[in-house]
Length: 162
Image 1 (cartoon, one colour):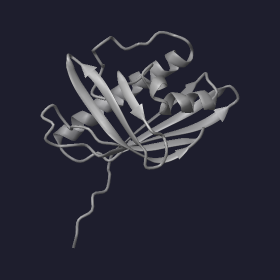
Image 2: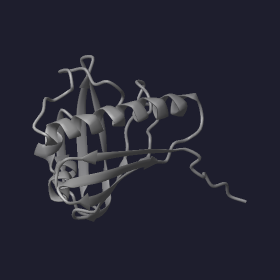
Image 3: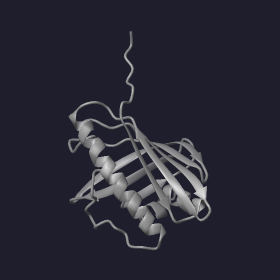
Image 4: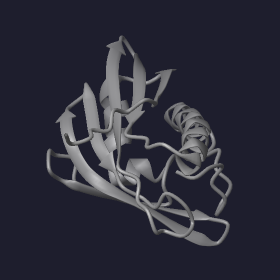
């Protein structure tokens, strides 16, 4: 009988942003907007089947993540695969799914982030903790950017493995 992997962990976060839903959607999908709060470099094709690529500089090293858009509903939902090295060796890749659900409330937007696809073992345990902290930081940076505030990232030094 074939074995199936059932995700036992999922990362879930919520933030309320002081920005209209169309502005938030653009910040999550447009390469120029993404660079203002998330990766150092970005390329996006936000349509089902379209690809994306994010580059992060961390401690002088280049970290690359990429994937495909699985679902895109303007101003409501963005779902994409996230493929990146599991650790610094690059020998094993993650295959996560990231989902942003957006709910408009006047000039504010609730963003619900869910990330699934974590495997078992100590490397995934560490990855889960790093990404939970990282997403919290980057969601705060998104809030700052949308409010016209400062970019909270330190140049060349991401707070976590993205």
